[in-house]
Length: 404
Image (cartoon, rainbow, N blue to C red):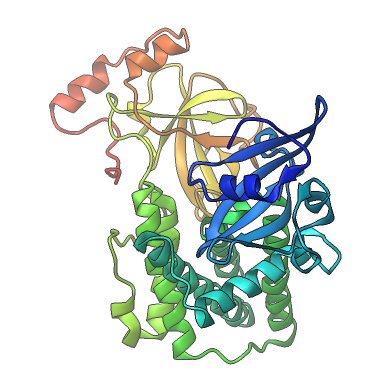
């Protein structure tokens, strides 16, 4: 039921809408004014979560306002906002707590867990059941990653801690409850709570030089979660996340080699010291980027001076890794090298050797030829005859790693 309905809404009409697989949202009116836009999120076994607000505006206005049990055809934890426009909701079905989203969602989670474990509820399909199992395994690994971050911190491995934090937060977001696809404000709280727990453990270990006990089982849990995540993001062609998983797995396996078989799946292991699966391969397959408001060409290795087109400029990207590039330099750095860019524009003053570029670099997907790149930006195409002859002799244009 997606057509507008007038308040009060009958219990039967609401049930029919919730039991319709394709019911996405319903607008409830009083007169000509919209009272409530109601969303139907089927994210628990045989249970629907009801959200109210304006999700399509991408603003932080959506709130959880109740739950519907398809097997018993009963409502639970209904907020005062929703119960006021529905006829037939009993007091027992209404939320007895504050009626805030967090309290309602906590009640729904407890109800859903009990329903699955004790009442014989089943998942809607095998795919949902499989995903729920994978998500639980990842959550277990994320919990263990907090303790491992403390171990790294106690050992003075600050960069490794920061890398683990980045990956953990990305995994937390990727494997979040589907209800948070609508209820973004609720996810922000979940993320904040996890980040605070992670940071507190790291600070304590750094201060005392001691970390909580870390067992082989926790290492196994982390490796399993990394393997699951690497497989999933491979399907999304996210090579950088796979590299992050492999780097952390390599560190763990150096300490717990007995668990090497755990880190396996449908992904290609990349244990390179630096992320290489990006950038241009040759002059006919160039990868573009955006740097300091200018279009640039992106490479994953330094371009030899003799191959830089006349009138163009070569600069080097530096930072903790490819997603944390914060400096642009004229010379290749001794440490922290991330990549190289070519630009027809001067990006660093003649008297300077480097420039801060935090949050001012973006690498595009896909490829273009030099001719297409110049035509797009209305630039004169540089003379490549010298480079072309070198290519014909087999020495050539930038030799880059092949993308996944």
